[in-house]
Length: 148
Image (tube, rainbow, N blue to C red; front, side, top):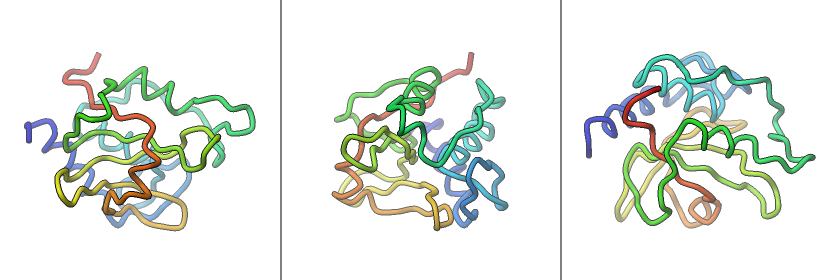
């Protein structure tokens, strides 16, 4: 594991137990999946690259716009699906035909992979990256080595 990967995973694990709160990004107080990613960015890389706009729980599903994917593409580095590393950011499509609207951070790879995420009704947790989750992955990104 590289130093950056280790920093990302350690920072993400520091958010475990933070309650779910839509549009929040405050470790220990409340966060959603994007807020977790934003918080880890701040802890590891510094200032966020752009302010997150207000967003609804449906992540632009009615219009079919891939807003979360577009934002990830602006600030993260796209990774091939078959290259896995701790600290990777996973983008999930929760239902076939809907927009991608969930994010997680890979904590462990190998025989028993895990990822850290926040989702409605749950606090931040480290979950097994089981087949049902893995099938929902539509993109994999890494944090940039340096911020702009």
